[in-house]
Image 1: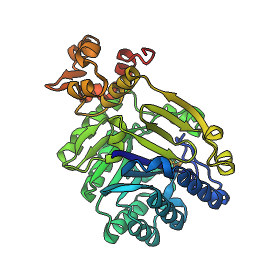
Image 2 (image 1 turned 45 degrees about the vertical axis):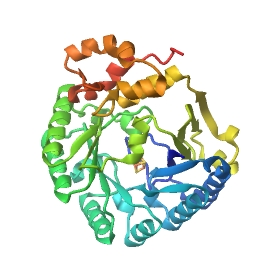
Image 3 (image 1 turned 180 degrees about the vertical axis):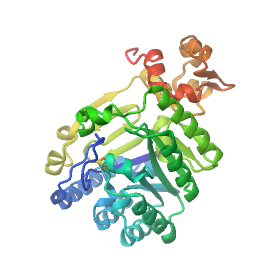
Length: 380
Ligand code: SF4
């Protein structure tokens, strides 16, 4: 039976952080209606899902931890009623430390959630205020300790760099603080200024964003610090203890199959990519109407699937492998990309490995530029 990942979108937040462009709303009056629509949508896929075995679930958002945990438990029960799971699936829930409590954590564990992702972003309270996060360092620490005490054995902590006014010193303090808590996984993202967010209109903050050289140093030094503390880099922004990589996210990067539920969620199944419209109201009205909710749908040719495999695979520290490329797409990796990658190999941004190609750490940092140069999605 083929393996599948399931993504469930919970589009609610207590308030919008200044830099965020993820799809979420702060109108909690919609919660009840949203969850009954979500249940209906999942149940509607029952016959479709019978041919798959689920080995990872990711409950993301928004802020899944800001809603009453009874909704999360109910959705997990609904999912269990329509799909088969592998023996030890990885089931993650994202959380904001300002919204976790004992009951929620116990409920998550009791319904089978076994991985908790906590969005700390920074251990510096001034930086957190500037990001308009609802929590401070001490709220994070209490939530982290509580999760550990109640039984979460697999925890991820999110950290951000390249924040306005951030110094390498404050970033390193955050990293040292987080590694001292010993989570299994650390995600380390650079701030991106997204169009239309409140941050994008704040000239005073934008001018304090560290310049390219400073960002480069932050990334390289932080990655080294994380490695020294026992975390291996396995993707541009992700570090983990041995064998604790995020199975669900690896599925994305290895071009595996996944299905998404809820507005804004994306799916990739049997070479077909589709995503739902970011509109909670229309989703609530017609959760099972594929054509009302669908925003994009595209069947990729084998050539496009191969391009996507390289685009996502080069995000991984291990890179892309010629044998797998041949097996999945019947194409020759060296023939398709050898020449195009040559100049990046000379610049020390890429490397030929005994299995294929990978980007170096410096290359990972400029991967968008490299990928837009070497990939050609128009080739069918
Ligand atoms: S809590 Fe997360 S999803 Fe919600 S607004 Fe902030 S960054 Fe975005």
